[in-house]
Length: 563
Image 1 (cartoon, helix red, strand yellow):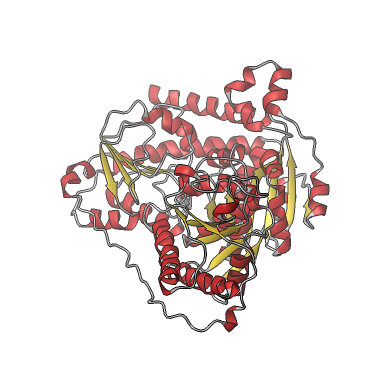
Image 2 (cartoon, helix red, strand yellow; image 1 turned 60 degrees about the vertical axis):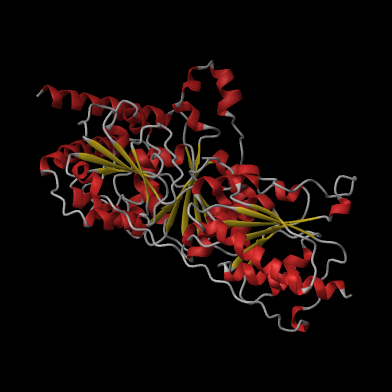
């Protein structure tokens, strides 16, 4: 028996199953035990492979690849702690329904639990954070085992694509020798191709028709494509309801969407009209005042999820509908509705105009800093991606941006809202979309994934990093922790790192800039190549600016209601 030939045949069958299920990209973190799988994938002309030596970065890079077109992406690592470094990205993939195909390679059974090097229990390593876990048998080349490898690859990958989508793990044990025979020397293997037909789901909404003819409010959460955003705009127009979301919903093309409440964070700081029904798509947006307002509402709530997961943190939904946005809109179009009168939407539009005026007036008077950057960015970028990091970055844009260019697609990692892997995710998005990306990120989140810059450098990706440097965890200046004594706050939450980011830029061959005015900043945007634009500000400055806006808006609204 030629074990190297058997190994090659087994993996050829396995990879055929991956490809038939839709895998065309793999991110490989080199190691010894993964040698046979890495070689076979790397040599396959139908698989595009990327190499990343840091498994944590590699997993987030793969996550970025999946975000662009929702296609399955394989991750390949060696045995031992390498697989554990995938964990944060897998948690994010589970929370945001991204189909990562996690291929962990392993020692054989006789080397488990006996002190062998680079061996640990990898079975069910990711617990409930993957949709399915499969422990494969050792490679054999019998007809039965080739069909088995082919089927397991196809079936497990297909499970990742069934809505709600999510990551899966396949654990592949290998014995030495680890070098497979050259695939070119293997005779053709006759394995029957497998095809999976996606189910078609129609939505019947007749029973809810009366609700859709009452004054309502649409609340959109989670990352949305431009196509979904357009459909949601049509839905709002059909119902004559206002809608709100956050930057990741891509609803903020101001000229096209007059129903959109762009300044929801300000609007919901004061009294707003009470709707007769609330229609929600996905989880809640980042805007905290909206969540707080929702807790006080008693009207019927309809929750629409594509692949029902019942993610209703407020436990308020009365109707749960498993549907895509497109199918839901089709169901609405079938109802022959009588839309509500214009004055309902006009009330909300008046609040939006007032909130927008407050933001613009205050931003115009602000000194150059993080708030001014957040207000500018969405309008200045053209024909590219915008990635908003967690903590202050996304919140500042949510509050202060009054418009965004319709050619910009906005992304983020808002599943479990971590600050890990953001640079790497941007690298994956830029690669898959073949478009430039601007990343707005704070200094701690940027520091947390500096290894991700290596992928940007290696593949010469057109990425501009706009670095909001307040020397620490500026988000906590907005939160109750800011009430602590200064020394304690600084040690536990302010956490200054005192990093020289110009040197970081030099290390990864980024062009470094530190603009001193909005005009200088704007000139640096939409440029080819790799750029690091550092904006230094005090942790308290955005807090004071926002508090002034809230106070001003609440004062004007009090006068409005008094009239």
